[in-house]
Image (cartoon, rainbow, N blue to C red; front, side, top):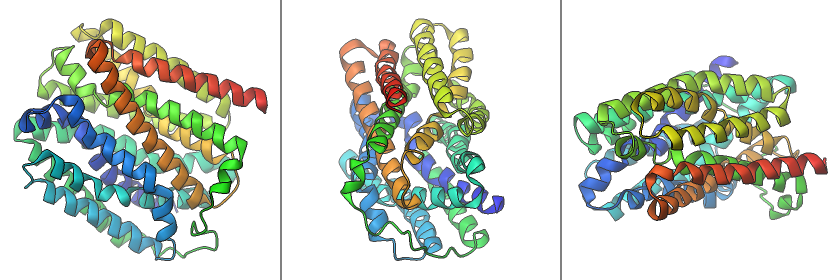
Length: 377
């Protein structure tokens, strides 16, 4: 059964590289289209916004289709739109094309997470979910820095070609190795807004929202920060993103192990550590050697954020796993959008050298909400 999880993680690797691979390419795209970097950041935030708004509805709309066919179709659309993006010379057209695969992003995520949650015993569920999220970590390790390196060596179009190839490989892997998946009676077809009347779910979603928004408020502009503040070139930025993601694999595994046993304490320690790291990013941002070490520790902690947020949401209510995971995916992408926009706002008003404080503020809200939930429980 673990083989199935790793095959699904391969698909997560593909779609995550498409979503976040653009982070390291934003300076090149901004230069190519003669726009500011914060405007280029809409390539990330608009993608996330589509996922956020349409996530549960897409999962509900397609709930009657065969699960494996949906997974393969989603990866094909990701590959095709990345290929199409190579030939676009207008930023707004590129933005629209980038939004097309975003409609299928939550479909893949919700099915993959739902399968993971049903494969192992409840006490080992977070480890199974951790395998799926390892696809995200590996995308951070390989996908994002490789896309950045391709843009530096060739052009931003080369980075989109790379993500197209990754999604095609993932599609072939899912088609060949994943067995057929039976539809269950707990499909997400009957989406009902009354589910949000559950107080535990609402609080869990707010914790996830502030946590993920805080992560991407700074990380969304990491490449520009390293270039502008730390004085790194394209190859050095690629290496830093590779370092960030490499240690993130271990961080994701650590988070999975501890969230299954100590969810509240793990969440608290995560937020405290990540806040402290962002203070170091702000203080040592202009120092070349210290920022290398800080980036490594940053990646180790940062990588567990999605997994921790997912467990905080899915453990708060009992309902269709596909439904709750589609809601989490929407929440997470709302958070990515909000975090990126807030980071861009902060950068525009206070300078990119102080962007880490936008993340620290959001982490404070996440921590307060976490404490409130603990008191209510």
